[in-house]
Length: 304
Image 1 (cartoon, helix red, strand yellow):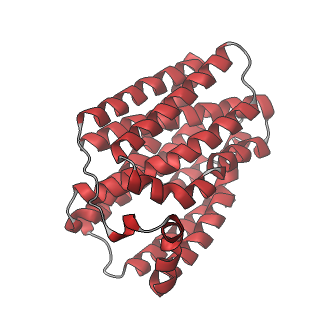
Image 2 (cartoon, one colour):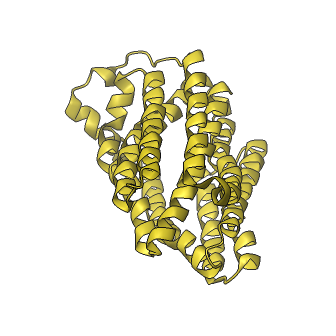
């Protein structure tokens, strides 16, 4: 719970900064491409890093990796703030910083996920995973609404200061808790080549994992194509209203928390793949309605 609270507070600050940077980028470029590229560069380094992240997390203290991830994000926020107050911030700076944060964030995220499996019993994995989901969705409720209200008042620099405070809280909670390290196994003794290919070989032998991987890849590819233009569409159709954008993004967070609470109470379907497929289908229908909408009366319930 301590880790969860720290990550929740930190993620709220990060989402507020992401929201404020989106508004800033839209104001200076008025370009859908610029906003889409911010998302692209945030994931660019995640792909090559993902190949090695498992080895890194298995061989380095996970608590230190999580602290490192928060520290890098905090330094990035300080750099953006310095460039902004000196009137030197440019859109390419955001692309570069997003790439760096994405690479370290991939390692931190894996360290966090695998630490949870060492802290909670197997019977509680579904509930723990639902709680983790609420970190994202809970932040998605409060961050856009707060940033949408505060951005016209305290500007980007004020949002960045709030983000730095939340990072400090997250790092403090990590310092005061203990995260167990996994015991040595035959896997850890294998050579680097075997470690790099272990995940591919394991998935390839299990047709259910292979089906899950293909299904997930198709869904998230199409989902992210739409997500890359969501915010630009809302701003363009709402006369650049940050409060409207904040409310719509918050409604998605409320829907996510509602789903996470329900799943935590229910425990999920016995057939996990079928349950995931139904979730993908529901999200796809909602996104289609959202894309066809022209105002908040359609966007808000569709996002929820």
